Image (cartoon, rainbow, N blue to C red; front, top):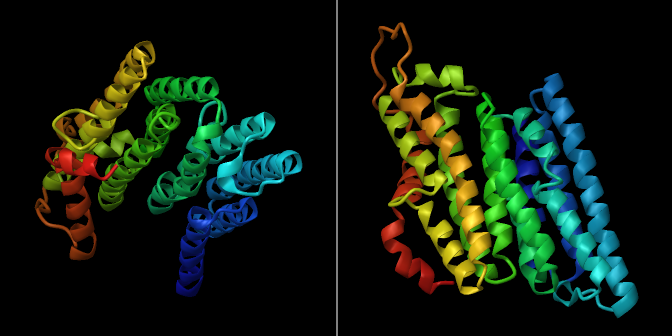
Length: 346
């Protein structure tokens, strides 16, 4: 990809995200979302592969429909209440439309069908952007409107996302599709708590983004796209695979790793809100996700290929990729002891 084009798309992504997260007016928030959508399209389609073009078309159509719903929701609210402020969304129909629109933007069940397909058609770095950076503006809009959304609808969507994300991920052999269903499952955890403790949703999103970044960067370095190629990577980069196993277990939410913190806090908050049944259901559904994370960890570290290759093991990797991986992997596995300090900020 042309360096100038890459610079323009990266700056547009940054600009779109900044506009949305800093705006109070619905039209400005919508503008930021549109800039973001248009900026990511060249990054998805840069390989010119038919799969990538298909992913772009699916992504564009879904995001255009979601943006239309955001605009329609805000205009309906302005028509009835005279308010264009993000925090003044009070009309019930507008709230329902906005929940559907943000569900489409994020890939929440039942609007999740596009997400695994688009991730599968993208490169690893673009898939990382779609899983983390592109989710930030819609999560911010949810955060700002959380007080006026329907709790029953959000809880139903969250439990369905956690269930379907775990269930559909069991049968996949493509690593990007597994991580897409993992993202859908984590979104369920974020959305279930947004009405009761919006700051906890943001904390969960930040920690999820951190751990997912570590996983995607590692997979991009060892050039793995499906489970069968994952088996052979252990003989090439043993240290990187060992840290990948820890990062995957952190993504699964196992103590004493970083990923345990948000799940622990969410279950605690749900129990405080007297939603013990909901907390039990979503905790049980996370076991589905644990199965495929363990399978990924098993393939990357424990399974050896039948004919191990006779070449020197690569104990260190290129500094330009190694340093970011070292930083994000350390953070995504070792932050749990700092939880009192993290809790004091929310």
